[in-house]
Every structure is written in structure tokens, then in C-alpha cells.
Length: 222
Image (cartoon, rainbow, N blue to C red):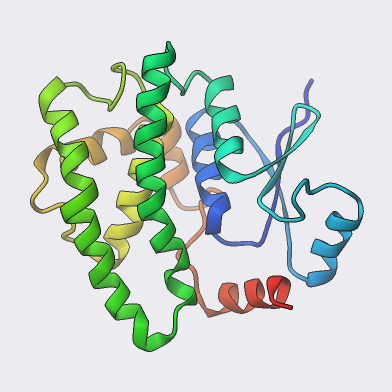
């Protein structure tokens, strides 16, 4: 029996959270080895476990994968979450790339100076409402299907749901003008594997707190 994937990252969301989401959506159990010190990171680097000397890193199928998007693509493709043909894969990739641009703002938010954090919440809301959410609202409205691409669950649905829920933690009414996205959020959240991941006690990480921020600084700052 193949070993479970092992995730190497601090004990928090960051860029690894999308990987956790996709594994969970695929129904894949995984282990985690949390980085807590600079010495742990140095050990991985010195052992040639990190291709570009950085995490996230996922041990899976005898490989040590790095670069978040590459990890996501591998898992999605392996578990039939990356479309049926080249056209669907390209659509999924475009939607994911756009969503990850928005998600990156959320990931970096806790590391901003306190005076800048509220301004950035306003910026995130504006970008979501003006640039990103109208795209997905139109896609769902025009094809009338449950999922973004190919009428089946894909990486695009998973990353969009992750991003919506993370934004709702900061801006609860962020979807007020987007009825199709509201319906999408409810439906995707109730897919059994995703519903399980959203329940207490799962490996889904809570919003970043001061302890997580300090840990990240201690590990990665010179």
C-alpha cells in the first residue's frame, strides 16, 4: 500500500492550505510534518529535499514536489479534478490562476503592518467584487451548471470555494451581489469530502493568528 502524502510546512494556512483542500476534496488522507524552527528548514535544504530551497513541499508517489501550482496540478490530474481534455484543462488553469492571484492577497494579509491591514481588506473586497467574482458569476449563470468546468468537480471549484470562504471570514457579505456564487458555495460545501473537511477536527487550518505569524518570521526571516 502506497504511503500517504506528507506535507512539509508550518502549522498554518499559507500556500499549503490549497494543497490540503485539494487532497481533502479528493478523499485522500495525508500526514503533516510541521516546520517550527529555522533548523528544520535548514535540514530539509541541506538534505537536498527542496528543489528550490523552499516550501511548500509534498512527498507523494516517491517524489518530493515543490512549487504550489505544480503540486496542485499533479494532485488534481491524478484524482480526475483537472478536466477531460486540453480545452477543459486550460479553462480550469485560467480560473485557478486568477483565483490564486486573489487568494495571495489573503495569504499575505496577516503579515502586513496593523495600520495597513484594514486598508488591504478594502482592496481585497474591491478586487473580488469588481475583477474576479463577476467572471465566475457569469460563467455559472451562462452555462447553468453546478460546476465551473465540464459539469464535474475540478480544481477550479475547490480553489474558488477556499477563496470565497476565506474572504467571508473578513467580509461576511462579500457575495451579496452574486446569487449564483452564493448557490455555488452552498452546493460545493456540501460535497461529502469537502463537507467533512469543513467540519471541526479536520486538517483544515484556522485563520492565521499572531503565533503563526511569529513562527513564519522565525523560520524564514534571515
